[in-house]
Length: 456
Ligand SMILES: [Zn+2]
Ligand SMILES: [Zn+2]
Image 1 (cartoon, rainbow, N blue to C red):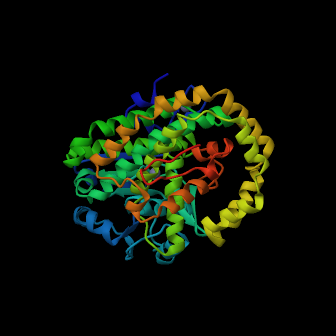
Image 2 (cartoon, protein in one colour; image 1 turned 90 degrees about the vertical axis):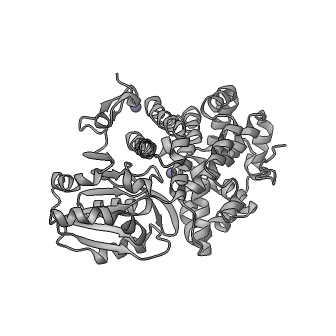
Image 3 (spheres, protein in one colour; image 1 turned 120 degrees about the horizontal axis):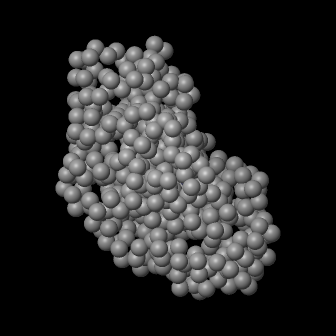
Protein backbone atom coordinates (compact mmCIF):
# COMPACT_ATOMS: atom_id res chain seq x y z
CA UNK A 1 0.00 0.00 0.00
CA UNK A 2 1.38 3.36 -1.00
CA UNK A 3 2.10 5.78 1.83
CA UNK A 4 0.20 9.07 1.71
CA UNK A 5 3.43 11.03 2.05
CA UNK A 6 4.75 9.34 -1.10
CA UNK A 7 1.70 10.31 -3.13
CA UNK A 8 1.70 13.18 -5.59
CA UNK A 9 -0.79 15.99 -5.13
CA UNK A 10 -2.76 14.54 -8.02
CA UNK A 11 -2.95 11.17 -6.29
CA UNK A 12 -3.91 12.75 -2.98
CA UNK A 13 -6.99 14.32 -4.54
CA UNK A 14 -7.88 11.46 -6.89
CA UNK A 15 -11.59 10.71 -7.08
CA UNK A 16 -11.06 7.05 -6.17
CA UNK A 17 -9.32 7.96 -2.93
CA UNK A 18 -6.49 6.05 -1.29
CA UNK A 19 -7.14 2.74 0.45
CA UNK A 20 -5.34 2.80 3.78
CA UNK A 21 -4.19 0.30 6.38
CA UNK A 22 -6.39 2.05 8.95
CA UNK A 23 -9.41 0.64 7.12
CA UNK A 24 -10.57 3.92 5.64
CA UNK A 25 -10.47 5.07 2.06
CA UNK A 26 -8.89 8.52 2.33
CA UNK A 27 -10.64 10.79 -0.10
CA UNK A 28 -11.31 14.49 -0.49
CA UNK A 29 -13.72 15.93 -3.03
CA UNK A 30 -11.19 18.43 -4.40
CA UNK A 31 -11.13 18.38 -8.19
CA UNK A 32 -8.27 20.70 -8.97
CA UNK A 33 -5.35 22.41 -7.26
CA UNK A 34 -3.09 24.86 -9.08
CA UNK A 35 -0.06 26.14 -7.21
CA UNK A 36 2.78 28.18 -8.70
CA UNK A 37 3.68 31.29 -10.58
CA UNK A 38 0.85 32.32 -12.92
CA UNK A 39 -1.52 29.79 -11.35
CA UNK A 40 -4.23 32.43 -11.76
CA UNK A 41 -4.17 31.88 -15.52
CA UNK A 42 -6.03 28.64 -14.90
CA UNK A 43 -9.04 30.41 -13.33
CA UNK A 44 -11.19 30.50 -16.53
CA UNK A 45 -10.54 26.81 -17.20
CA UNK A 46 -11.27 25.87 -13.58
CA UNK A 47 -14.53 27.83 -13.48
CA UNK A 48 -15.48 26.03 -16.65
CA UNK A 49 -14.62 22.65 -15.16
CA UNK A 50 -16.78 23.42 -12.12
CA UNK A 51 -19.58 24.58 -14.37
CA UNK A 52 -19.48 28.07 -12.95
CA UNK A 53 -20.61 30.61 -15.55
CA UNK A 54 -20.91 33.54 -13.17
CA UNK A 55 -18.97 33.31 -9.90
CA UNK A 56 -19.92 35.24 -6.81
CA UNK A 57 -16.68 36.64 -5.39
CA UNK A 58 -16.27 36.92 -1.62
CA UNK A 59 -13.33 39.03 -0.43
CA UNK A 60 -12.34 41.84 1.90
CA UNK A 61 -10.54 45.10 1.26
CA UNK A 62 -7.11 43.54 1.90
CA UNK A 63 -7.55 40.37 -0.12
CA UNK A 64 -8.98 42.25 -3.11
CA UNK A 65 -5.99 44.58 -2.99
CA UNK A 66 -3.67 41.55 -2.97
CA UNK A 67 -5.35 39.54 -5.73
CA UNK A 68 -7.40 41.80 -7.99
CA UNK A 69 -4.54 43.49 -9.89
CA UNK A 70 -3.64 40.04 -11.23
CA UNK A 71 -7.07 38.42 -11.19
CA UNK A 72 -9.32 41.08 -12.71
CA UNK A 73 -7.46 41.40 -16.05
CA UNK A 74 -8.10 37.66 -16.49
CA UNK A 75 -11.81 38.17 -15.83
CA UNK A 76 -11.90 41.05 -18.33
CA UNK A 77 -9.91 39.29 -21.00
CA UNK A 78 -12.12 36.23 -20.81
CA UNK A 79 -15.31 38.29 -20.41
CA UNK A 80 -16.34 36.40 -17.28
CA UNK A 81 -19.32 38.06 -15.56
CA UNK A 82 -19.33 38.04 -11.77
CA UNK A 83 -21.12 39.19 -8.64
CA UNK A 84 -19.17 40.38 -5.63
CA UNK A 85 -19.40 40.95 -1.90
CA UNK A 86 -16.48 42.78 -0.36
CA UNK A 87 -16.20 43.18 3.40
CA UNK A 88 -14.96 46.60 4.47
CA UNK A 89 -14.24 45.94 8.12
CA UNK A 90 -10.99 46.17 10.06
CA UNK A 91 -11.46 42.77 11.74
CA UNK A 92 -13.69 40.28 10.05
CA UNK A 93 -15.15 37.62 12.36
CA UNK A 94 -16.46 34.38 10.82
CA UNK A 95 -19.81 34.62 12.58
CA UNK A 96 -23.55 34.76 11.90
CA UNK A 97 -23.31 38.43 10.97
CA UNK A 98 -20.69 37.81 8.28
CA UNK A 99 -22.69 34.89 6.86
CA UNK A 100 -25.89 36.97 6.90
CA UNK A 101 -24.13 39.86 5.16
CA UNK A 102 -23.00 37.64 2.29
CA UNK A 103 -26.42 36.01 1.95
CA UNK A 104 -28.15 39.40 1.86
CA UNK A 105 -25.68 40.63 -0.75
CA UNK A 106 -25.80 37.44 -2.82
CA UNK A 107 -26.45 37.87 -6.52
CA UNK A 108 -29.06 35.23 -7.40
CA UNK A 109 -27.81 34.99 -10.97
CA UNK A 110 -24.47 33.60 -9.77
CA UNK A 111 -23.94 29.85 -10.00
CA UNK A 112 -20.79 29.37 -7.94
CA UNK A 113 -18.63 30.92 -5.23
CA UNK A 114 -15.10 32.24 -5.63
CA UNK A 115 -13.52 32.95 -2.25
CA UNK A 116 -10.57 35.33 -2.60
CA UNK A 117 -8.62 35.37 0.64
CA UNK A 118 -7.12 33.20 3.34
CA UNK A 119 -8.50 31.83 6.64
CA UNK A 120 -11.72 33.68 7.40
CA UNK A 121 -12.80 34.31 3.79
CA UNK A 122 -12.12 30.70 2.88
CA UNK A 123 -14.17 29.45 5.85
CA UNK A 124 -17.03 31.81 5.03
CA UNK A 125 -16.88 30.52 1.44
CA UNK A 126 -17.20 26.91 2.67
CA UNK A 127 -20.31 27.71 4.70
CA UNK A 128 -21.96 29.80 1.99
CA UNK A 129 -21.19 27.34 -0.82
CA UNK A 130 -22.50 24.35 1.07
CA UNK A 131 -25.60 26.22 2.27
CA UNK A 132 -26.44 27.47 -1.23
CA UNK A 133 -25.34 24.14 -2.73
CA UNK A 134 -23.04 25.86 -5.19
CA UNK A 135 -19.51 24.84 -6.18
CA UNK A 136 -16.65 26.64 -4.44
CA UNK A 137 -13.25 27.68 -5.74
CA UNK A 138 -10.68 29.51 -3.62
CA UNK A 139 -8.00 31.95 -4.69
CA UNK A 140 -5.47 31.87 -1.86
CA UNK A 141 -3.86 35.14 -0.82
CA UNK A 142 -1.44 33.96 1.91
CA UNK A 143 0.23 30.77 3.20
CA UNK A 144 -1.12 31.63 6.64
CA UNK A 145 -3.07 28.58 7.82
CA UNK A 146 -3.85 24.99 6.96
CA UNK A 147 -7.57 25.23 6.22
CA UNK A 148 -7.53 25.72 2.45
CA UNK A 149 -8.07 22.07 1.64
CA UNK A 150 -9.94 21.00 4.76
CA UNK A 151 -13.66 20.37 5.04
CA UNK A 152 -14.04 22.06 8.40
CA UNK A 153 -14.67 25.74 8.89
CA UNK A 154 -13.56 27.52 12.03
CA UNK A 155 -16.58 29.67 12.87
CA UNK A 156 -18.01 31.69 15.71
CA UNK A 157 -21.52 30.53 16.56
CA UNK A 158 -23.42 32.06 19.41
CA UNK A 159 -20.16 33.69 20.58
CA UNK A 160 -18.57 30.26 20.81
CA UNK A 161 -15.65 29.19 18.65
CA UNK A 162 -16.73 26.06 16.77
CA UNK A 163 -15.32 23.82 14.09
CA UNK A 164 -18.15 23.03 11.69
CA UNK A 165 -17.98 20.54 8.87
CA UNK A 166 -18.86 21.65 5.37
CA UNK A 167 -17.47 20.64 2.04
CA UNK A 168 -14.01 21.79 1.05
CA UNK A 169 -13.40 23.92 -2.03
CA UNK A 170 -13.64 21.98 -5.29
CA UNK A 171 -10.69 23.96 -6.57
CA UNK A 172 -7.80 25.83 -4.96
CA UNK A 173 -5.69 28.30 -6.89
CA UNK A 174 -2.53 29.62 -5.25
CA UNK A 175 -0.45 31.99 -7.32
CA UNK A 176 2.99 32.39 -5.77
CA UNK A 177 3.18 36.01 -6.97
CA UNK A 178 0.35 36.79 -4.53
CA UNK A 179 1.56 34.47 -1.74
CA UNK A 180 5.08 35.94 -1.88
CA UNK A 181 3.75 39.44 -1.36
CA UNK A 182 1.66 38.50 1.69
CA UNK A 183 2.44 40.50 4.85
CA UNK A 184 5.21 38.96 6.98
CA UNK A 185 2.83 38.24 9.85
CA UNK A 186 0.86 35.94 7.54
CA UNK A 187 4.01 33.91 6.84
CA UNK A 188 4.67 33.83 10.60
CA UNK A 189 1.13 32.59 11.12
CA UNK A 190 1.58 29.82 8.55
CA UNK A 191 4.71 28.62 10.33
CA UNK A 192 2.93 28.87 13.70
CA UNK A 193 0.02 26.78 12.46
CA UNK A 194 2.52 24.14 11.29
CA UNK A 195 4.60 24.08 14.51
CA UNK A 196 1.32 23.15 16.22
CA UNK A 197 1.46 19.77 14.50
CA UNK A 198 4.19 18.59 16.86
CA UNK A 199 1.76 18.67 19.74
CA UNK A 200 -1.41 17.80 17.82
CA UNK A 201 0.03 14.53 16.47
CA UNK A 202 1.46 13.74 19.90
CA UNK A 203 -1.92 14.28 21.60
CA UNK A 204 -3.72 12.31 18.90
CA UNK A 205 -1.54 9.27 19.71
CA UNK A 206 -2.00 9.73 23.46
CA UNK A 207 -5.76 9.99 23.04
CA UNK A 208 -5.72 6.85 20.90
CA UNK A 209 -4.01 5.08 23.77
CA UNK A 210 -6.23 6.43 26.57
CA UNK A 211 -9.64 6.82 24.93
CA UNK A 212 -9.32 4.39 22.02
CA UNK A 213 -9.99 7.20 19.57
CA UNK A 214 -9.40 6.45 15.88
CA UNK A 215 -5.82 7.06 14.77
CA UNK A 216 -4.09 6.65 11.42
CA UNK A 217 -0.30 6.46 11.33
CA UNK A 218 -0.32 7.09 7.59
CA UNK A 219 -2.12 10.43 8.02
CA UNK A 220 0.10 11.38 10.96
CA UNK A 221 3.11 10.66 8.80
CA UNK A 222 1.84 12.88 5.99
CA UNK A 223 1.55 15.73 8.49
CA UNK A 224 5.02 15.06 10.01
CA UNK A 225 6.51 15.01 6.53
CA UNK A 226 4.86 18.32 5.60
CA UNK A 227 6.07 19.89 8.84
CA UNK A 228 9.66 18.76 8.26
CA UNK A 229 9.65 20.00 4.68
CA UNK A 230 8.46 23.42 5.80
CA UNK A 231 11.03 23.69 8.58
CA UNK A 232 13.83 22.70 6.21
CA UNK A 233 12.84 25.70 4.08
CA UNK A 234 12.84 28.17 6.97
CA UNK A 235 15.74 30.28 5.69
CA UNK A 236 14.41 30.49 2.14
CA UNK A 237 10.96 31.29 3.45
CA UNK A 238 12.35 34.22 5.39
CA UNK A 239 13.78 35.50 2.10
CA UNK A 240 10.34 34.98 0.50
CA UNK A 241 11.88 32.69 -2.07
CA UNK A 242 9.15 31.68 -4.58
CA UNK A 243 9.84 27.96 -4.34
CA UNK A 244 9.86 28.04 -0.52
CA UNK A 245 6.57 29.94 -0.37
CA UNK A 246 5.07 27.43 -2.79
CA UNK A 247 6.30 24.45 -0.74
CA UNK A 248 4.98 25.97 2.48
CA UNK A 249 1.60 26.46 0.88
CA UNK A 250 1.60 22.82 -0.25
CA UNK A 251 2.60 21.65 3.23
CA UNK A 252 -0.26 23.59 4.78
CA UNK A 253 -2.61 22.28 2.12
CA UNK A 254 -1.60 18.65 2.81
CA UNK A 255 -2.29 19.17 6.49
CA UNK A 256 -5.75 20.40 5.62
CA UNK A 257 -6.26 17.30 3.48
CA UNK A 258 -5.09 15.20 6.43
CA UNK A 259 -7.94 16.56 8.55
CA UNK A 260 -10.40 15.69 5.79
CA UNK A 261 -8.93 12.19 5.44
CA UNK A 262 -9.27 11.59 9.17
CA UNK A 263 -12.75 13.12 9.27
CA UNK A 264 -11.64 15.05 12.38
CA UNK A 265 -9.33 17.98 13.06
CA UNK A 266 -7.06 15.79 15.23
CA UNK A 267 -4.05 15.57 12.90
CA UNK A 268 -3.71 19.35 12.92
CA UNK A 269 -5.16 20.68 16.14
CA UNK A 270 -4.85 20.00 19.85
CA UNK A 271 -4.30 21.91 23.10
CA UNK A 272 -2.20 24.57 21.34
CA UNK A 273 -5.25 25.41 19.20
CA UNK A 274 -7.51 25.46 22.24
CA UNK A 275 -5.36 28.10 23.89
CA UNK A 276 -6.03 30.19 20.79
CA UNK A 277 -9.76 29.34 20.75
CA UNK A 278 -10.25 30.42 24.36
CA UNK A 279 -8.25 33.62 23.81
CA UNK A 280 -10.36 34.41 20.76
CA UNK A 281 -13.51 33.99 22.82
CA UNK A 282 -12.05 36.22 25.54
CA UNK A 283 -11.41 38.87 22.91
CA UNK A 284 -14.98 38.54 21.63
CA UNK A 285 -16.22 39.20 25.16
CA UNK A 286 -13.86 42.14 25.49
CA UNK A 287 -14.59 43.53 22.04
CA UNK A 288 -10.93 43.29 21.17
CA UNK A 289 -9.50 42.02 17.87
CA UNK A 290 -7.48 38.80 17.93
CA UNK A 291 -4.08 38.21 16.40
CA UNK A 292 -3.89 35.89 13.41
CA UNK A 293 -4.86 32.30 14.17
CA UNK A 294 -1.41 30.84 13.50
CA UNK A 295 0.33 33.44 15.67
CA UNK A 296 -1.84 32.69 18.71
CA UNK A 297 -1.49 28.98 18.02
CA UNK A 298 2.31 29.35 18.05
CA UNK A 299 2.17 30.71 21.62
CA UNK A 300 -0.19 27.86 22.53
CA UNK A 301 2.33 25.40 21.06
CA UNK A 302 5.17 26.80 23.15
CA UNK A 303 2.98 26.57 26.26
CA UNK A 304 2.07 22.96 25.44
CA UNK A 305 5.80 22.19 25.18
CA UNK A 306 6.38 23.87 28.56
CA UNK A 307 3.71 21.71 30.18
CA UNK A 308 5.28 18.55 28.78
CA UNK A 309 8.72 19.64 29.94
CA UNK A 310 7.27 19.48 33.46
CA UNK A 311 5.16 16.35 32.92
CA UNK A 312 8.22 14.48 31.70
CA UNK A 313 9.63 14.87 35.22
CA UNK A 314 6.37 13.86 36.89
CA UNK A 315 5.25 10.46 38.07
CA UNK A 316 1.46 9.87 38.14
CA UNK A 317 0.12 9.75 41.70
CA UNK A 318 -3.05 7.65 42.01
CA UNK A 319 -3.86 9.00 45.45
CA UNK A 320 -3.63 12.60 44.29
CA UNK A 321 -5.85 11.88 41.27
CA UNK A 322 -8.44 10.06 43.40
CA UNK A 323 -8.46 12.80 46.05
CA UNK A 324 -9.03 15.35 43.31
CA UNK A 325 -11.96 13.38 41.89
CA UNK A 326 -13.50 12.93 45.31
CA UNK A 327 -13.35 16.60 46.09
CA UNK A 328 -14.48 17.63 42.61
CA UNK A 329 -17.22 20.20 42.98
CA UNK A 330 -19.61 20.45 40.04
CA UNK A 331 -21.00 23.82 41.16
CA UNK A 332 -17.51 25.32 41.28
CA UNK A 333 -16.72 23.77 37.92
CA UNK A 334 -19.84 25.32 36.36
CA UNK A 335 -18.90 28.68 37.89
CA UNK A 336 -15.45 28.39 36.30
CA UNK A 337 -17.01 27.68 32.88
CA UNK A 338 -19.32 30.69 33.26
CA UNK A 339 -16.49 32.94 34.38
CA UNK A 340 -14.16 32.06 31.52
CA UNK A 341 -16.57 31.48 28.64
CA UNK A 342 -19.16 34.10 29.49
CA UNK A 343 -22.89 33.82 29.93
CA UNK A 344 -23.71 33.18 26.27
CA UNK A 345 -21.32 30.32 25.55
CA UNK A 346 -21.23 28.63 28.98
CA UNK A 347 -24.67 26.86 29.06
CA UNK A 348 -23.95 24.96 25.85
CA UNK A 349 -20.53 23.86 27.05
CA UNK A 350 -21.96 22.61 30.34
CA UNK A 351 -24.79 20.77 28.59
CA UNK A 352 -22.41 19.03 26.18
CA UNK A 353 -20.03 18.05 28.99
CA UNK A 354 -22.91 16.60 31.02
CA UNK A 355 -24.22 14.63 28.05
CA UNK A 356 -20.88 12.98 27.41
CA UNK A 357 -20.10 12.41 31.11
CA UNK A 358 -16.90 14.43 30.94
CA UNK A 359 -16.62 14.61 34.74
CA UNK A 360 -17.96 11.12 35.44
CA UNK A 361 -15.93 9.42 38.25
CA UNK A 362 -16.16 5.95 36.70
CA UNK A 363 -14.86 7.10 33.33
CA UNK A 364 -12.15 9.03 35.15
CA UNK A 365 -11.08 5.87 36.96
CA UNK A 366 -10.86 3.94 33.69
CA UNK A 367 -8.71 6.60 32.07
CA UNK A 368 -6.53 6.98 35.16
CA UNK A 369 -5.78 3.25 35.16
CA UNK A 370 -4.76 3.44 31.52
CA UNK A 371 -2.59 6.52 32.14
CA UNK A 372 -0.78 4.91 35.06
CA UNK A 373 -0.32 1.57 33.28
CA UNK A 374 0.95 3.27 30.13
CA UNK A 375 2.90 6.22 31.53
CA UNK A 376 6.20 5.05 30.04
CA UNK A 377 4.59 4.65 26.67
CA UNK A 378 3.02 8.11 26.91
CA UNK A 379 6.43 9.62 27.58
CA UNK A 380 7.88 7.65 24.70
CA UNK A 381 5.23 9.16 22.41
CA UNK A 382 6.04 12.64 23.68
CA UNK A 383 9.77 12.14 23.23
CA UNK A 384 9.35 10.84 19.71
CA UNK A 385 6.81 13.44 18.51
CA UNK A 386 7.90 16.61 20.25
CA UNK A 387 11.45 17.88 19.77
CA UNK A 388 13.46 19.43 22.57
CA UNK A 389 12.06 22.63 24.06
CA UNK A 390 15.13 24.58 22.91
CA UNK A 391 14.47 23.50 19.33
CA UNK A 392 10.92 24.84 19.26
CA UNK A 393 12.07 28.01 21.00
CA UNK A 394 14.79 28.62 18.43
CA UNK A 395 12.34 28.04 15.56
CA UNK A 396 9.95 30.53 17.09
CA UNK A 397 12.74 33.03 17.52
CA UNK A 398 13.83 32.54 13.95
CA UNK A 399 10.42 33.68 12.76
CA UNK A 400 10.18 36.41 15.40
CA UNK A 401 7.04 34.73 16.75
CA UNK A 402 5.64 35.94 20.09
CA UNK A 403 6.69 33.77 23.04
CA UNK A 404 4.08 34.47 25.68
CA UNK A 405 0.50 35.54 26.28
CA UNK A 406 1.72 39.05 27.17
CA UNK A 407 3.19 39.41 23.69
CA UNK A 408 -0.24 38.93 22.14
CA UNK A 409 -2.31 41.05 24.49
CA UNK A 410 -3.23 38.60 27.27
CA UNK A 411 -2.34 38.46 30.93
CA UNK A 412 -0.72 35.53 32.72
CA UNK A 413 -4.13 34.88 34.26
CA UNK A 414 -5.67 34.69 30.78
CA UNK A 415 -3.05 32.09 29.87
CA UNK A 416 -3.85 30.10 32.98
CA UNK A 417 -7.60 30.41 32.40
CA UNK A 418 -7.16 29.29 28.80
CA UNK A 419 -5.37 26.16 30.02
CA UNK A 420 -8.03 25.16 32.54
CA UNK A 421 -10.88 26.02 30.14
CA UNK A 422 -9.26 24.25 27.17
CA UNK A 423 -10.50 20.91 28.45
CA UNK A 424 -14.05 22.15 28.00
CA UNK A 425 -13.83 23.39 24.40
CA UNK A 426 -15.26 20.12 23.16
CA UNK A 427 -15.13 16.40 23.53
CA UNK A 428 -11.49 15.97 22.64
CA UNK A 429 -8.84 14.42 24.85
CA UNK A 430 -5.93 16.87 25.00
CA UNK A 431 -3.05 17.50 27.41
CA UNK A 432 -5.28 19.50 29.75
CA UNK A 433 -7.70 16.54 29.89
CA UNK A 434 -4.78 14.39 30.97
CA UNK A 435 -3.77 16.97 33.61
CA UNK A 436 -7.36 16.89 34.89
CA UNK A 437 -7.31 13.09 35.06
CA UNK A 438 -4.07 13.27 37.07
CA UNK A 439 -5.69 15.76 39.44
CA UNK A 440 -3.23 18.47 38.46
CA UNK A 441 -5.17 20.86 36.24
CA UNK A 442 -6.56 23.25 38.82
CA UNK A 443 -3.53 23.65 41.04
CA UNK A 444 -0.92 23.89 38.39
CA UNK A 445 1.27 26.97 38.48
CA UNK A 446 1.13 28.13 34.92
CA UNK A 447 2.68 30.05 33.33
CA UNK A 448 5.41 31.23 35.62
CA UNK A 449 7.13 34.46 34.76
CA UNK A 450 10.18 32.52 33.72
CA UNK A 451 7.95 30.80 31.20
CA UNK A 452 7.80 27.59 33.17
CA UNK A 453 5.21 26.22 35.46
CA UNK A 454 5.54 23.83 38.33
CA UNK A 455 3.96 20.62 39.49
CA UNK A 456 4.47 19.85 43.12
ZN1 LIG B 1 -5.51 5.79 7.19
ZN1 LIG C 1 -4.77 25.89 12.81
